[in-house]
Image 1 (cartoon, helix red, strand yellow):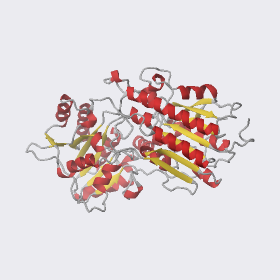
Image 2: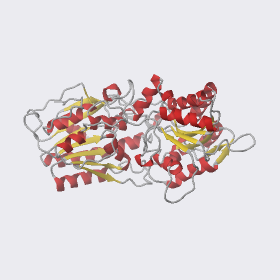
Image 3: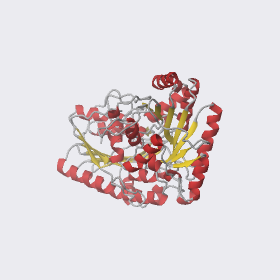
Image 4: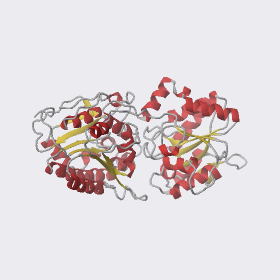
Length: 514
């Protein structure tokens, strides 16, 4: 069967399994350890291949690991478009970071006004939410402008890097600050408080009062405060707000009127809440310091804050092609992946087309993934099946993020559980699509679960994700299809358009996988 000559009628579903990478290495591989009868049956029965999900093939820098932002951007645009993280990394390596107009103007203004500078973000080289290289780049810029009052408000990791390592990262930062000749640590807190993304505002409020009012545990030494927390059995991410104080017991710094605040996380959803609380005026009339704010990347278009590294919008996306052809496309996921299926999938655009419908399953704000590793998977599956039954034809983009969300907690056993739950949901959605006479295209936005640390490896160094993810084309009339090798995520959108006999936009450099 040739998809270019014999059109396959909708429904067609693109099912994205976040974090579902391919690796033959069993150690720390939650995918291989999990019981996945539905996924195994799909790969055995239907045409399948492997896709590159990271690096230059999808628009990242060479050697970069996969991430959900870059993955969804490549899936939706059909070309190696660059996500914000790749743009920042490239600027750091080329030297253009120090010449960034937004950052440079803010630094120059702070220097003229003799204002204090505050750098807020995750102190981690895990590469998922932030980069220590970004922080070091900002310190060098401040030094170049002869700014002396530079304060770092460090959010501690322990999730994307091995646990009980926050003290090591603080020591390394202190060495780097001494080398550059500027900077001091003003506050500390774990990401549980500083990077909440589920509207647990009581956690964010504690960070706000730490930054603005110097409320929190007092300590003269950052490293000592973290090690004391470890002795009390508190992991990096759960360290409560700590205010570093001077020899005369005064806080090193508070965020106050006239200061410059730069957030250096590149991933938006986990820093958005803190930015809103400190830097965005709200209707409640809550008193906030009058500060200048710079966001490293766009955290929320509604904030209307200066952005150092905006993503360039991409035209000619999969959504554009479907809209031009009058094909309804329905996107389903849960709260955490809303920007990935809207902003990133649509080529860094916030707008929604006339034929596009977004269905978002809310995640309870107090959901504990170690107790509920399925997260919203079953609700997503039920809604997808119900929508398909009522609507029929159309293109459905169904995203299951539970496995990678649980993997980010570092719990290997719970990640195995999450993979098994996602597998069950995958089976239900695929059966529904196939029984309706449609095609299910199964892939992943990035790998993660296949290259974890197992629970007994907590002291081992982190392992990078593998570069390959699956692609399966499942349906009643696909037995004659042959899928080529050598593809990447940018080839998925052209493949879907080929199945629909829709001409792919000229901007797409990917090619169908048949």
